[in-house]
Amino acid sequence: MVRFIVRRVLSAILTLFVVATLTFFLMNLIPGGPFNTERATKKVIEAMEKKYGLDKPLFTQYVMYMGRLVRLDLGDSYRRAGFSVNQILGEKFPVSAKLGLIAIALAVGVGVPAGAYAAYRRNRAVDRIIMFVATLGIAVPNFVMGTSLLLFFGVTLGWLPTLGLSSWQHYIMPAAALSFYPTCFIARLMRSTMLDVLGQDYIKTARAKGLPERIVIFKHALRISIVPVVTYLGPLAASVLTGGFVVERIFTIPGMGKFFVESIGNRDYPLIMGATVFLAALLILMNLLVDLMYGVIDPRIKYD
Image (cartoon, rainbow, N blue to C red; front, side):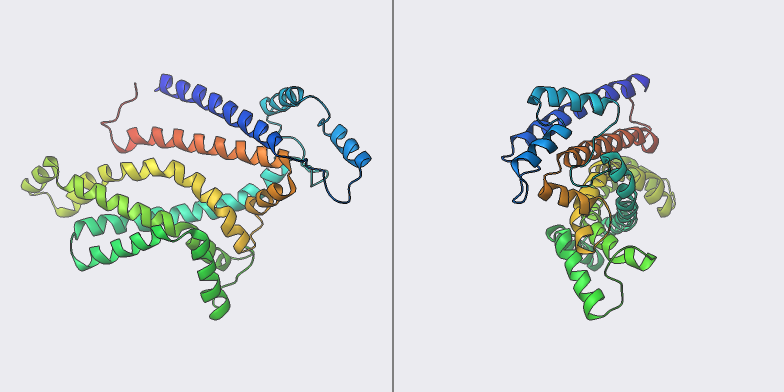
């Protein structure tokens, strides 16, 4: 176990190094600069570039950036004077994380039992209905779902608030929009895996021994069937947070999405690179936690 964790940590450090390097050079390959606006004079641009060290050779800038990154310093925002990227992420990420965690809980809490029940009732009406909704949900992007919910429940019916996150009612539509696709994906994945597990010999043996059906399903079949869903949780966390950027813009939520999208338009390089590296680190951490959960869920899985 310890060797496995050490290898994964070293691999994570190398991955973050590659992500940070690629992001840095890709940002500098974009034509123009962050201070090139219609109102900015040449002297103003030169002064700003000198202030942030952009007048130095590219490799020197890269070494300076990586040196700050080792110290967990993501630099200062070009557009929000007096604010560091660390401050912006520390202020805005909890908002996005709370919404994302609610969406993940909904996706798992609805998708797993729906998929398992569809497998248990294979080829019956409830199975067909669940799979129809799941197939439809996979084809609908979250921004389409978010806009539809906003127009129907927020504007037409007026049942739910449409802007911000000042009360628990404000979370309903954004969380539903974010969780709809992963819920449908998990339901399909769970059904497929559950059908395979229910056909295994040890399930037939358990039933032949006269074990109650609830024991066969929950203790034997469901525990093994949920492993692929756990595998999906790592990418799901990252996709919900990044996909949530669009949903946050639709519902005017003051999370990372607003500032990340604006930073791209404003060419706020430190904020773009900082958010990218931060999300990459989050994805790596989630995948590591998922790998460690395998041994808890399925004792047959061993770490070499």
